[in-house]
Structure formats: C-alpha cells, structure tokens
Image (cartoon, rainbow, N blue to C red; front, side, top):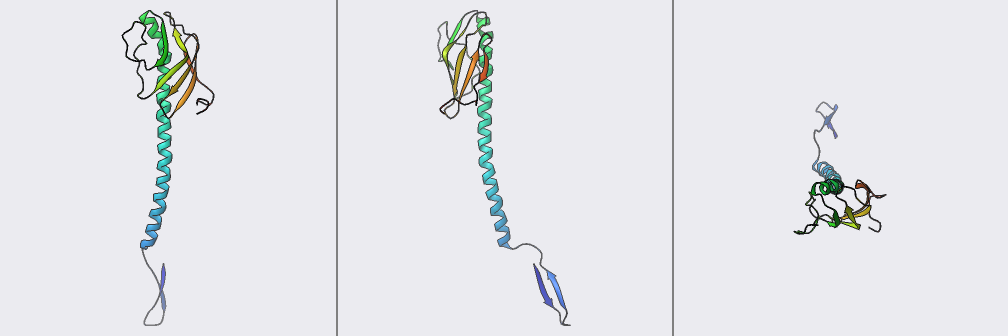
Length: 154
C-alpha cells in the first residue's frame, strides 16, 4: 500500500509499506485450505478406485491361472464361488492369492477339466462397495470385463 508523507520542506514523498495485512493472509490461507480440501476428496476417490481395479485385476489373473492348477492336480475343478470355504474334500478348489474382502461367484459354476480346458462362465465379483461382471471364455479361461466394467443394476 502506498502512503503519502509530507516532509518539513513541504514536498510530498511516497512511502511504500512492506508486507501484508493479517486479513490478507487469512483470506489467502482460507482459499488455499478450500482448494486442498477439494483436492483431498478427489484424491481419496481416485485412490479407492485404483485399489479396487488393482484387486480386480489380481483376481482376474488368479482365475486365468486356474487351468494350470487343474493340470498340476490332475483333476477336474468345479468352482461355484471364491474364495473357497476351508474344506478337506478332494474336489475343493485350490488355495489362491485372493485380495481380502472380495468374493466371486460363477454362473454357471466354472468347470475346468484335468487337461486345463475350461467351460464358459460369467464371473460376478464384489467387495461390498464395488461390483464387476466379467466373462470367462473357453478354452483358456480368458477373463474379459463386461462393457462398462460395472455389473448392471449397481
């Protein structure tokens, strides 16, 4: 801010004040806090979506790995849901590296022959807040996310 100052000789000199007023600093800090708060909400949403997509892709990889497990076990696998409940039966699905909180259901149940060939199925995937639908295609259990990536009706 510029302030006029009159000297003893009668000349007017301009003095420049340095710095900002407390009010100016408070207004700038309030605007910055608002911007940071808005960015934090968007960043949190972005991180949650990124984690859900990473978990989904991990599950897709595990499903595509099932034919290898069937060949190694030398037996037919019939999977209705994953993660499989703890079971000691001979036809229990193999233990997978499964993200916590996620469940999968196959409609119709996914069948994988001892030679590794699998039948077509639909994979319905959920963690409570995210739901996805994908197609598991024969003969290699290729997983393809349905159009839009989300399950219809969610």
